[in-house]
Image 1 (cartoon, helix red, strand yellow):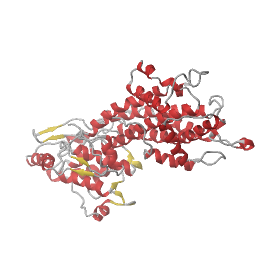
Image 2 (tube, helix red, strand yellow):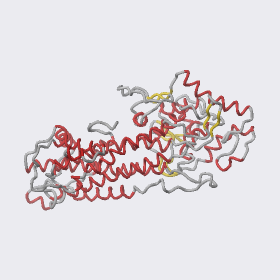
Image 3 (cartoon, one colour):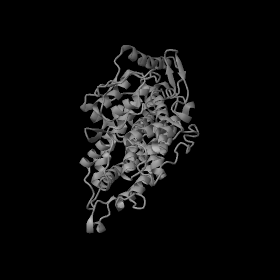
Image 4 (cartoon, one colour):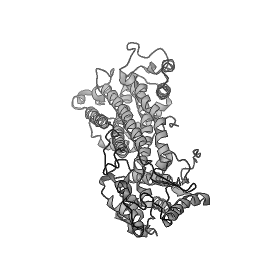
Length: 521
């Protein structure tokens, strides 16, 4: 199916109707910018209900369906007596209630709910319209299951974390509602909802899928896309602040190496630097690699983003539980679509590319604070002058912190996907680790965004101090960025604690406060 054209109205609902959704749709729901709406189209609802009716008919005819009339996983050879079939889905989410670790954030939880709703809306899971409507209602009323982040190996899907969604739909376990932690049944009652009694296939359909890793991957991709653009803008500022050579990004030069993302990064830098030949710094033809090769580093991330979007969005728009129910052709299809290998690859790839960009910025800062390499700027970018310069240390500690955050981000790039474990009596003997990869990627992004926040302080400081040394002619983009930073951050003259500035800038980074180039298509 083709993607719908997104409305320019930010409050228009994201429609869940089995048609293709984009990362931006899931993120808009997750961030509370657009509501989620289950389609009311009669044909769509009939398509969904046909799957549930087909499952019911098979049961009435004493058909054998994995996870419906049998146990789960290695217990698939255990036949469930017909009188106990209705209890089976409730046992599934009950015994999977063993998650540990920090609970997902509200944004992450909404992304998970939206991702699961997108998959079930494909109409291949044998669930009722009532189940989809209950998930929609959780999003509508912002009743958020408290989902532990640890306990999934990524096949058979995100069983343990998604058990918390299944339980909440049935009025069990706990939720976050209007800022308070409370029993799910209480929250449902407050908005006029009743707990569900799951149909035979529905417990498996909710839990046996990739919604946790996919929802997290959508959030990670969008954050990485913004990080890529902001790192490019910061590099342009650092070239100016350090008195660097603006002609390392020449169009003819980059035409000789046709990586599109790398070329796009160089094009953005040229636009930001508005340089004219000859080079402004004829004594130094070549800057150090962290400036000269910035398009080659940031460009790797830029080139990866379209490919990773494809992987994430294909997973998002898939039916990924087991078995699938093809009511139209009256087939029960046993397979392994719960396997999250594509998300695992996407997240392992993304976190490596992101950490490399953080490392690039860390190296740029190391040059800016060092009088051996910053071409006339004061030591540690301190704004102190006169005799007080002796007791002021500017951004000395900030550079150490950036180095620490970068090192931890780099450490976090070990691929999770290669650590498959055999589980569940060797039924799940090859697993994706996609959820762990997604969590790791978000941690690398968190650390890298802290690096960006620090680099914004350095950018504001570096440009101001360079302007004290020589007249600067900034492009409109850089001038606007500097003006914005000057309004947000006071020049560091006398030493001060920078943590409040960092927290404010980190919030601005995560809210994508600056308009930066065009968004990746």
